[in-house]
Structures are given as structure tokens and as C-alpha cells.
Amino acid sequence: MPVIWSSSPSHQFQESDTYDLSIKRDEFLYMASEHQTKAFEIVKGYVKLSLYSNDGRETIVSILKPGDMLGNFDPSQSYAFENAQALSKTELKVYESLILKRAIRHNPSFVMKLLADRQRRIYQLQRQISSFAFLDVAERIQYFLLFLGKEYGKIQDGTAFLDNFLTHHDIS
Image (cartoon, rainbow, N blue to C red):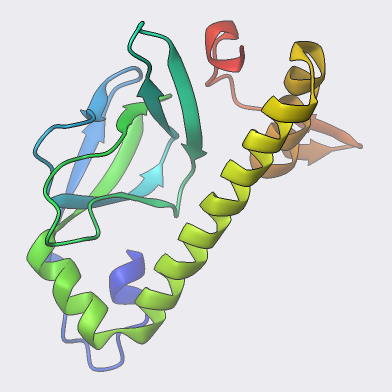
């Protein structure tokens, strides 16, 4: 069940206020500076959030997994800040801006989930900045692989197994 509706005490929101979307690996959900007024919840698959430098280099800001939300949560803002691209076949729930506005007003547990998600992303960005400042390339890759194993891996007999959703380019 989508996160917006799961904790609504009075059931004031309806499933019909959302729709499902499926995108293929490498397909963009949205790009930076595009007009974007929707929010998305990942049901299945992985999405990377990235930024491009002026010379075309990509920096991955975050990798999102099922249960994570992305997109526009501010009804007064209508442009995307980052690029959102599927790392695997991905299924999403789509929420219109007006529905989010209602959910934020009437559903405190939804607001708490959004705040917790934003706090987790801030922590991830702080770790990324720290690794850029204090680690060389080999150490950053090791750190990143350990992070991926803990965050996205399936642990079996003390070994973390990852779905093959990142390329060598993504990791570097």
C-alpha cells in the first residue's frame, strides 16, 4: 500500500488519486530544470538522482530503493532540481501536487516519513562530501561498495550480494 494512504486514520485519501507508472532501465523519470509537479514512490526497482556539471560529468547524489519517495514535494516549486533515472525496471506510484498538499495537511505520519527520508538523504550527502574530502579514489570506491552492501545488499553467510543495477561508470 502506498505510504500516503497507509496511515490515514480517516481514509480521507483514495487510491484513485494516484496512478501507477513503469519505466525501463536507463529511462529518465524527469530531468533537472524540467517542469515537474509530481511526487513518486518507488514500489519496485532502483532510481538514481544525479546532477551534471557544466562539462557534462555526472555526479550521483543518491540511489533510491523501494519505499523511497522522490520528486516535487513543494507545491510552490514546479521545476526539478536533479535528474531521476531508473537503474533497473522500476515501478512507481505517482502523486499529483494537490494530493500531496492534502496529505501534508491532514496526515502527520506522512509528514514524519517525509522528514525522516529527507534526514536520511542529508546524512548520505554528508558522508559523500566527507569521502570526497578525505579519501582517495580507491578508498572512496571501497567505502561506496561497503555502503551499497549495507544499504541495498542481501546478506547471506556473511557476504553481501547486490542486484546488478550499477555500471562501472556509475560507481566511479
